[in-house]
Length: 169
Image (tube, rainbow, N blue to C red; front, side, top):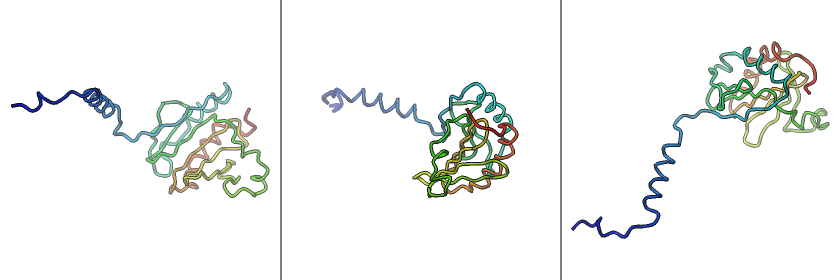
C-alpha cells in the first residue's frame, strides 16, 4: 500500500513549497552592491553627470562595478563596495560647531589633494566622507578595513575636475 495516498493534506503544504521555490528563485547569488540614488536639483545633476564621466576605472586597486540601480549619480568599486553618491544633501554635521572645533570624535573635517571632506565614522566601522566647499556634495562610503586615504587620493582628481569650488545649493 502506498502511504502517500493516505496522508492527510495540509492547508499549507503546497503553498509553502511554492513560496520556498519562489524565494529561492528570487534570491541572488551575486553580491552586487546597491545604493540609494540622490535626487539633486538640475545644476547638481549636471555636475554629477560630469563627475561620472571623469571617475577612475579603479579606486584603491579595485575595479569599477556600479551599484544597483544604475545611475550616473552613483558609482562603486570592489566588494565590499566603495560607494560614491553625487548630489546628496548636506550632512547635518557639516554645520555642527563641535565638528569645526574638533569636539566630535566621530566627525572630522579635513582635506585630501585639494578636496575638503567631512569624515564621519559610522557605528559599524564604515567611514562616510562628504565633500565640502564644492558646488555639489559628493558622498563616499568606505567599508571597514579599506584604506580611506588611498580611496580619497584616487577620487580627488575627478572631484576637482568635475565639481567646481563653491557652495552647494
